[in-house]
Image (cartoon, rainbow, N blue to C red):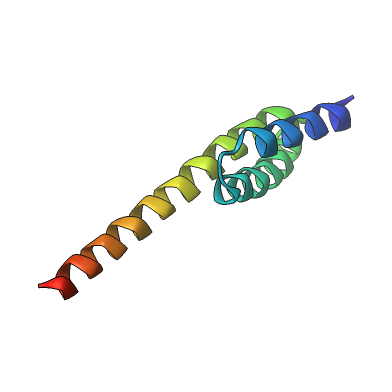
Length: 79
């Protein structure tokens, strides 16, 4: 049953992600969180959900910082 729930969680993370970057973050986070949760007294599903959320946050933040740096670079060279 946990494999079915994990597969459903993976599918929902990939389907709901607006960009591939966020999907990549969800998949990587879900795998890491699922493994960590499994070893922390069999809480793989909760770990996978938390990992997916953390992955979304990490890659969204990374994309925002990259966009900000690119804007700063183009603004600095335009003057």
